[in-house]
Amino acid sequence: MTNSPPPQNSAAGSRLRSIPPTPNYRLTRYACFTGYIAQAVVNTFLPLLFITFTQTFGITIEELSILISANFFLQLLIDIFAGRYVDRIGYKTSMIAANILCATGLALLAILPFAMPNAFAGIIISVIIYAIGGGLIEVLISPIIEAIPSDNNDQLMSLLHSFYSWGQVGVVIVFVVFVAIFGAGSWPVLALLFALIPAATLAMFARAPMPTIVEEDARVDFMELLRRPAMWFFCLLLICAAAAELSMSQWSSAFAEAGLGVSKVVGDLAGPASFAAMMGISRILYARFGERVDLRALIHWSATLCVITYVLTALAPIPGISLLACALTGLTVGIMAPGLMSLGAQKIPNGGTPMFSLFSLSQDIGGTLGPLMVGAIAGAFGDSLHIGLLFAAIFPLVMFAATVRKSVRRRMG
Image (cartoon, rainbow, N blue to C red; front, top):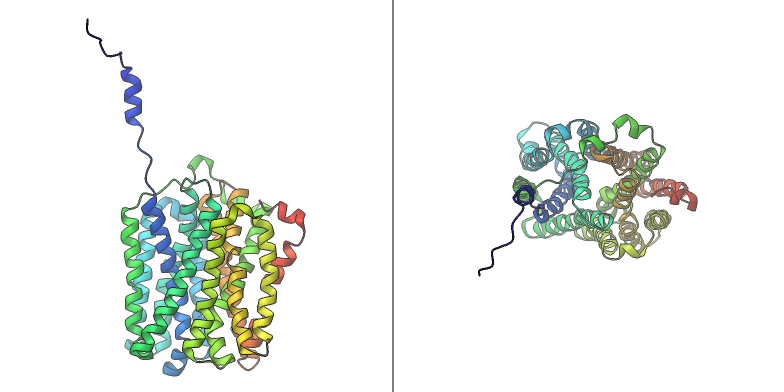
């Protein structure tokens, strides 16, 4: 007598076969990491050319401030509109378009200043194009990472932001080596080479699966977000965090050269490169050991130390101490933005694209306001970046004051 196989429930089998397999988001993560490197390129490369632009094209410090502010102001405008339209357009299409714009803007930066009668006009056009792409990247990448299934999203967010820091370090080191070998006049070739990074990123996003950011019926309405005090609180802190980060990041190279009298190579390595490296280290450390610390308290004490490092950078009588304080500022600001975004996502779990658009908007307000005020105040005091950077200590000071009470920190998450 033969044993017949047990009867199968064909309906249950059909249902099981109809369940799609769980997507593998590894390529999506890698594309996000590379996307933040592209973002670092468009934010870091131009400030390294400030002294070169001054010497080659006669651009003033006020015009340099305009270049910084134009980049972040355009990203700010994108933040406003992205929350309204990205969900309709689609994340994949938007990310591909963002990287096309970044690659195009960087390529034009190598061409337009020499092709147009007014070099400043050529530079500003290039900045406008890649700033639009950079703004889209900033809005889109964080919610993509937050939506990828994971048990430690706050640490993954910190790891994501560390790639921005390492991108900054890489840009500075490649710039220094390239210029040392081929001369300062070779920077247009380097701009074309850097354009390959967003080009590679868009190819990755074209193949990567996209997670569902927030189910449509679960999203918080934009106006509802604006009625929540927690939203305004996080936006204020993100404005200050971005201003504290970008004021030092954008001006450290020029400060080291003009304010401390060191060479361009030393200025770039001891200024923006060391700053970015310390910022990346702090984010890697949190990604590795974050489960052992209170993120809210960490942000408070980071702001406290940031005030001290800004004051030391501006007022230390010895250039070596100023450069060390500049680098340590990167350590203090590293966890601020990714930490606040993760806490905000925990506090408002269904905020989706509108919430991250407001977060990015806040960062770009700070990224515009901070460097612009440093440049304006420095210009008002005889181009003294010492005074300009001393003023920037007000941004971490506001964060310290806003989070000084433990009851406030408890409400952050």
